[in-house]
Amino acid sequence: MKSYACMTGLLPQTKGSLATLAEELGREKINIEGLCAVEEKANVIFHLLTTDKVATSRAITKVGYKVTRHLADAGINLTTVYLATDTRLVLSCENLSALETAWKDVAAVASR
Image (cartoon, rainbow, N blue to C red; front, top):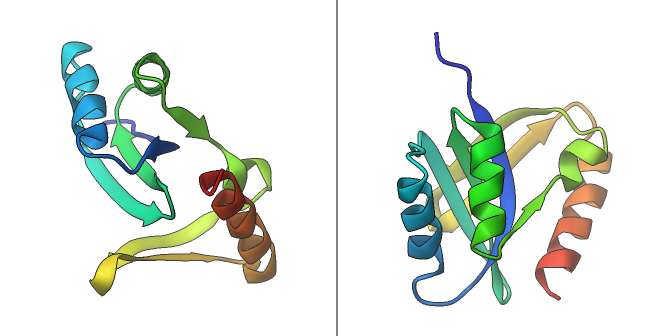
């Protein structure tokens, strides 16, 4: 059974920014097992699933993007994550109030 790493990060909302990340992952021989990207003002918040956390983090940083841990650092344990119609990201956890607060922090970082 494979072990997976989910990385969350920010990249600029520009043409080719996601392609730049995918190309670097390819150069590093990192398979994208899952990907979700949601536009937030001038940035894109992405969730990337791979089997190599260290190499993925290195690749994200190498292309100048940022790995974020706002939800994890806030002690949020997500129980459900999925992408709904109209690019709506759905998140669920045991403490929705804490999730709302942490997500506002993510949005504030994305708007910088």
